[in-house]
Amino acid sequence: MNYRHAFHAGNPADVMKHAALARVLTYFAKKDNAYRVVDTHAGAGIYDLGGTSALKTGEADEGIERVLAADLPEPVAALLAPYLDTVRTLRQSSSPRRYPGSPALALALGRPQDRFLFCELHGEERQKLEKNVGDDHRAKIMNQNGWQAVGAHLPPRERRGVLLIDPPFEEPGEFHRLVEALKSAYERFATGTVMLWYPIKDLQAVDAFRRDVARLGLPKTLKVEIDFAEVRSLTQLSGSGLIIVNPPFTLADEMRTILTAINPLMARDGKGRVRVSWLTQGG
Ligand SMILES: C[S@@+](CC[C@H](N)C(=O)[O-])C[C@H]1O[C@@H](n2cnc3c(N)ncnc32)[C@H](O)[C@@H]1O
Image 1 (cartoon, rainbow, N blue to C red):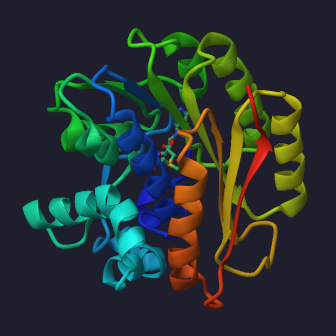
Image 2: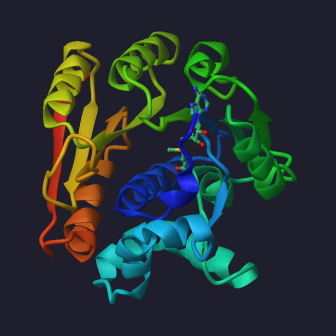
Image 3: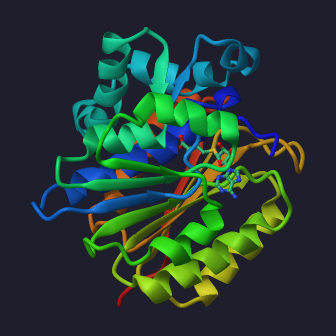
């Protein structure tokens, strides 16, 4: 396991993923009933974008820093407020270039009654996660393989919740594992919201993955994708995708509005394509 998210934190892919997570959790918070977030590949929880790793790639400068600096139109700013306010609050309370990963963002948006399970296999990353969010009594941090967490922790006791699967894609077979995990999650927790993140590099692999997901025939499967660079090679990230099963009914329109406004800011050609569409609908 060589992947370290500190090199990529706050990049355009993180921005689209975290903006979507924040919208989903904002919707969940409209009902008082508790929910649970299961984050199978949690990372370190909080990142320092002024640190050596982040500065080495400079990826956050093309992502969150551009979005924070932009003068966004009111509807977009309002939709992004739960996410961007979390980033700003974290920066005010600590150092000016900190960035919340999915655990810190989820906890910031969660209420006292909500619960959070974070799996992280890498020892150093897990220690950082413990340090960053471990004091929060709502959070449970596990040294568990995220792929096994799906079977072990679903359905949640609350019967409401979000499963986020955000693997590093450093080993072959991750697309296949995502499809298998989605199938297994749906069998255990058909009403849960599942978010799968995937890289857009190898277009054939992405195409096959979308087809495999659609073939599962689950109702209400939304695809959200952005391209922020030209496709140059099978190894260079040119875009970012999310499959979201059982999204809030508002999410497709919200993500279209958000990404149409911010992806041109992040894209290297200043255009930035956005694709939001249903792989399957109904149910
Ligand atoms: C893309 S990063 C996660 C980023 C995080 N979800 C966020 O949005 O801030 C993937 C993380 O998964 C961890 N990891 C890799 N394989 C894993 C596995 N099988 N189970 C749990 N964690 C794993 C890596 O150490 C890395 O920290």
